[in-house]
Length: 164
Ligand code: FES
Ligand code: FES
Image 1: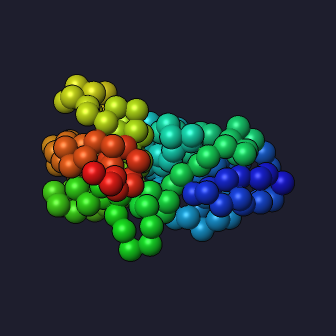
Image 2: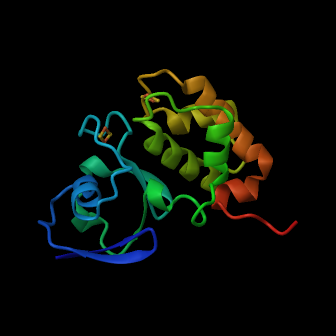
């Protein structure tokens, strides 16, 4: 058995410890927003956050993440019916086309803004380099990240509104 903390909730799953986190999320926990693309850490479709950092869940065994903070796309918004600033910017810029890569893109972008609330073009290019979009929405993705950062860098970093 593995004990995971996913989107702030303790979850117990009966799996072999070597099972990739991606399959536990999708098959056991029914969190299907995280996608399978390549399975070899080359496309970014399976990106989730581990302790705030973007990781590829397709090559991460559950044994390596037990007890740590895992966040999936289902946990990105600050509350029910609300959007993370990145999600709002994604809508504003009409980023998604087929949508398949988008949860991975958003999780990588969220990790970027948490460690760097005001990223340069180069910072964005570097952080998003491993997330492939077959629909070629790279320009809109970059514009949306800049919009989210400009709206309020602290808000974009945490997903929570500030008082000021
Ligand atoms: S499915 Fe994990 S990086 Fe492609
Ligand atoms: S929106 Fe289709 S792959 Fe990115």
